[in-house]
Image (tube, rainbow, N blue to C red; front, top):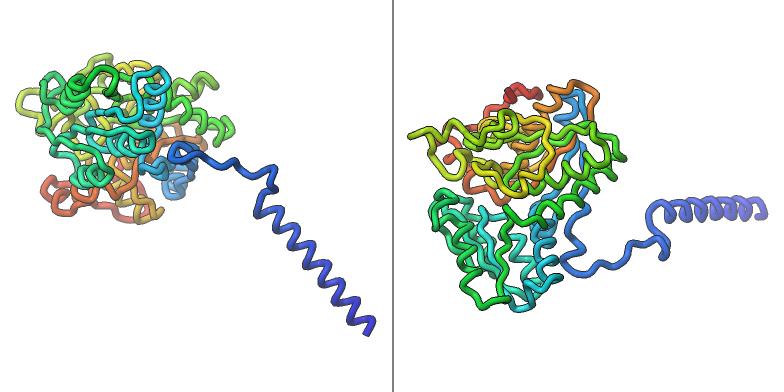
Length: 379
């Protein structure tokens, strides 16, 4: 009947309008679509900034974190590796077929191995033999040549950084790049972009940034960018056991009590965390604009990792856990109502043999002991 046809036509028109509205919400027009990226480089950076619900609720602050484990190489080091290699190609220090060398506990090596493959280069990594074994296995799977060495002081010729430096020097002139992430200014430059992303993602509405330091590149680049935009943004270091940087920031002295005779158990820092902590001043760290520092213990980092997994489903690496320890300490120092940003440097899958190994943790007296929803394990 005419009435049925009118009803059907009306329903069809409503459905069409809803479909059109849904398409506007769910997809972009061709003119608005993101451009096609070029290979590996297009995947690096522009990581999400996420709110960590449990830490935000418990502290009364907005605790936000850059999810750097979503980079293709699984860590924030992808940014640094890409920048160092791009700059070396741009000024003629490296060409396709050349060799890239680095001394690292693992993550930078993984990133360099991927970037090297993407530009037709080879990769050599020297790493301490007490680093997580899965990092060694991953490097081999990515085609890198790996040499494991015993942990020694940077002044020793067999320190992994010095081994990598010699390997590059042994190649014919102009055919090898020693990445030198600790001293290379491209490290800091790469993290100016990280700082820019944080600024844009927060709309410039943040009160503090906190992270640990290994090479110092992240905290140097991010702090430089954020303070250039707003000098009132506070920047804090969180430093693990055995590292000297806390005393350098708070007292102007590069010294850790674990360096006393007979106290040091491991090198370079007496901590189960990997990738952070340092007992020398690097060129990159010297560029950081830091207001204050906090100490973080191994137990706090282990407990934080367990807490984030249980409460938020976030499976993070050891340095990421320490960064979140720092975020809580900053939140307590500033008080409720502040926005604090930190970094989730990498995920937990590279830390299974040590940081997430129950036997290793028990041997070191670090079995997780979190109970309830609170953050009582942070001191």
